[in-house]
Length: 267
Ligand SMILES: [Zn+2]
Image (cartoon, rainbow, N blue to C red; front, top):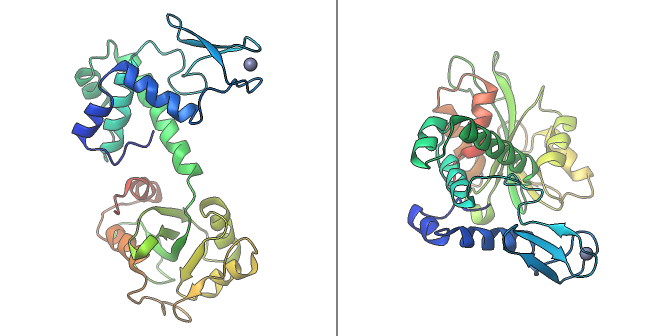
């Protein structure tokens, strides 16, 4: 589900009926048309009442919702889609009670289970998303009773490395990782978890970032300066913006900051 960019009205229009939601799921699941999950055959009988696709070659039955968070649900896809849409918009965490009311979901238990599944799926998406293309890398300190302090040496705060995807110098997606210290090993671990192969990384030239040079799957980072804090020039719009945002928030621990980065609208 990638509906983050749709306005409320566009969303309402696109997913007006249950059929429209099913069509969307079909296109997500089989962008090139139906394919049997077992034998790859491209023809199926559709059981209208049971919403099942039965392969014409091997008879294997599958549904649009198999393997998704909607599997065997008795709640309409429209309500599910609305809930995902609304949960994705509410930065401070959506109230299940209010969602239950506005989506007319029968019981609190149902809405709670839906919310739980959606949150898990969103977390999974965040985990699997990799920054690509041109990125910037920088490190800072976050959390603690006072707003985060710049530089490598603030005590009592969480050290983090921030990576920001900056196509055309405009920040788009951000990833953040807590590190014990800004070392080559930590930078490489972050790169392997959060960065797609072949990214071009811009850093401030701190020695730990040079580890990216030695890894064949990464392009050599473009160094924008040399030594500590040397690269804080106008070229680093992305990470500076994120860190500026973090500095101005009264977030007291790493988890809070991390949650914020995940939902940070930086477009
Ligand atoms: Zn088949």
